[in-house]
Amino acid sequence: DNQPDSVRRVLLKLSGEAFGGGSVGVDVAVVRRIAKEIHVAVQQGVQVAIVVGGGNFFRGAELSQAGIERSRGDYMGMLGTVMNCLALQDFLEQAGQATRVQTAITMGQVAEPYIPLKAIRHLEKNRVVIFGAGAGLPYFSTDTVSIQRALEIHCTEVLMGKNGVDGVYTADPRKDQHAQMFTQLSYNRALVDNLAVMDASALSMARDNEMPIRVFGLEEDGNVTRTLMGEKLGTLVCS
Ligand code: UDP
Image (cartoon, rainbow, N blue to C red; front, side, top):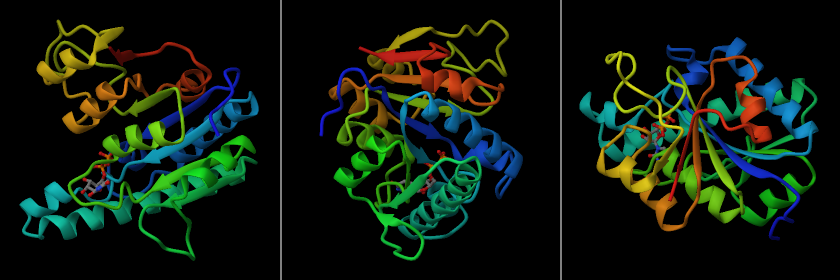
């Protein structure tokens, strides 16, 4: 089941924030555009697996601040990711792209369960596979899950699509006009300097297993296709 050298297989992480277009719910124009861009890359022969976040619906940590027990809030967060998966699946299918959703919490009417070998078969048949419900475990994030899924289904790279930033900076570019974007950055520097790329568990899992991560901006037209095709946009986090 290891991928042949000639085939590019990548894991695309899409933040929930992007799906919501900055508010709660799904911004269909955004999801439609991202779906079209993914389809273009798959037509060029790239195998694409996707992990979708859920921050446009719920985040467990925020719900717990508001008084909901943390684990239950996390499950709400995971269920939110599934709605994003279905929206993305719909626009992919509308674009002519065969797509399967696999969830870490079983919900047979809506999606397949997460079965790694089956996911690989889908990819080999040029189907997009979208992983929903995170890891199915409270206290995890979809960032961490994207590293884990990429490792398990033998992707060569994790591509983290972000909203509002186009890479990793020395400081927050929205607050500091002297902030500079890294083209490359080590896992350790990202961890030690706490550079707000992704959570520490995701970074340390990527470091321990040498999974390269490219952080790029989703908003610009064409960026999703370009990154999927292997263009070096944004910041590469690696050893
Ligand atoms: N979540 C979880 N376990 C997982 C993945 C997600 O508990 O394996 C919950 C967690 O509460 C998280 C929410 O689902 O805040 C939404 O996911 P995330 O915040 O990673 O989405 P994103 O920030 O990418 O939109």
